[in-house]
Amino acid sequence: MTDMKNYYVVAYYYLTDIENVQKEIIDQRLFFEDKDILGRIYISEKGVNGQVSCHKDYYEVLIKYLSEKYPKIIFKIDPSSEHAFCKMTIKYRQQLVALDVDVDLEERGEHVSPEKWQQMLENKDDNTVLIDVRNDYEWKVGHFEGAELPKCTTFREFPEYTKKLKKKLDPKKAKLMIYCTGGIRCEFYAPLLKSEGFDNIYQLEGGIINYGHQVGSKYWKGKVFVFDDRLTVPISEDWDKDISSCSFCKRISSTYYNCANMDCNELFLACNDCAASNIGCCSKSCQDHGRVRTFDRSISPKPFRKLSFQEKCKISASQ
Image 1: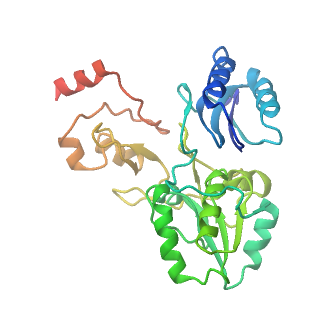
Image 2: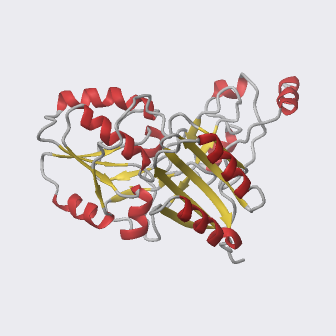
């Protein structure tokens, strides 16, 4: 049976001053309400950060709308056989990315094209440090060869990581190559690095996704973690193999599950057999204690949806 690619997954961000955020939110809700487009869009006084999936019939309308609203906006686009989101959410976020530090967005690093990035990887010297600006559960399934992989579970931990980095490196001599999934975290992290005295910052334009689209998988290992129903995807068509492993049996696997225990909900890597034998839970403790959702043995599991109050009560009453 042919896998019909009738949808597009579109990721984008645009940094600009938005004076009336609530009006912007209302305008966008009106635009999206009658269209087969689902996703997650955050808007703040500093801009917009969006990830949506749309049916092919609405693709050109979507691109036209956003391009007129945000001049020179850059999209990262992938075909899909289904929606990558279950609903449309458009809301205010005080921080487009949760760094918990106010930074000067005018002090960003040098934006480097994927082609130049590849050349820099091939020619980097001892003063060059390649840094993965993502959470640890993201780089576990894939990262650039030779990258420093900060053990940060959230982006909020990067300010502390940066202070430790400053003790290891000479900020005036070090050349930092930073990358993230789509580019927006680097837009905020580069100014933080500069505020700590690092002068030579190079950030991958459009992030990992754009690199895969433009030059393929060279110097990349594993898959790419994405914040939608797909969870992990190949970086490009010439993608090689998984590098991550099942947290139980240690067999190679890049499949993430949300713990079926609602009181945990932790993301964990597992092969399909181990996920099934542990009824979708990350540990024996989670199987025995708490409210455990029914496990659906799927080859490509989706994140658990938020249950209604009534559904939660039913689960609690049955356990």
